[in-house]
Image 1 (cartoon, one colour):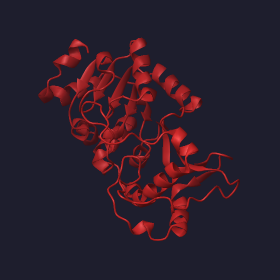
Image 2 (cartoon, one colour):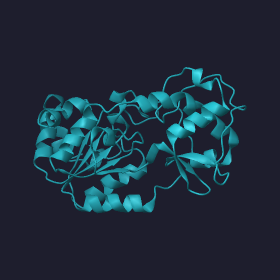
Image 3 (tube, helix red, strand yellow):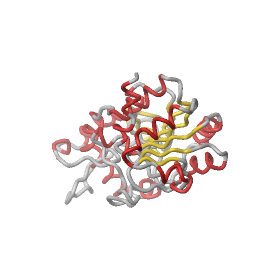
Length: 282
């Protein structure tokens, strides 16, 4: 970590972040799960970057095991209504205001909740996809998740009355439940396997998505990481590329990040509070 990052004392952190933002005209913003905790969507990792719960399902397990798909879609049926009801919080609105000021080259989010768009951000790339769409892995047909929810309930009456805490992936923490009787609809067009239109662990981010973000990063004079530990390589590599190009990086997050040694500024503070000056000036 640079001397500037080490010098940013907690009491001075919001001011240091504001100064960083004010002196850069084209900022590449990368966001993570910490942006959406204020909207009631849990994050994945603790302050040390370790998993708070079992790791998310892998692409290989989802595609290869019926039991894994039954467990996922049953939990998703229960958790989806609360995930759908989540609203943008102060972080989302602050970054939308920063875009309105013309200072964001691109907002690259690792989140799949579309809350940045709901807050008004337009220059957004959903690095890991979007949970509000269901994708057929056979014919590539896309279906709105709200329509698929109705079909899940019709095939599995009574499951919608189960109650459980929401999980980071929009599913629910159902415990001691037998999933083997859960019925998963197949694609009505080709009979293929239906999967959320998100990038699972073990699955590649579409190349064109990465290339679009790389181009925006190359056209930026700074990078700002908000609410992410960057432990997942698909996001961390953008910090590597920025550092290699000499682009200064600031991180606003709680706890350790994988890119700590690459940062020009690290601010450990509540994200909404630290970015509050953007909302005040909007």
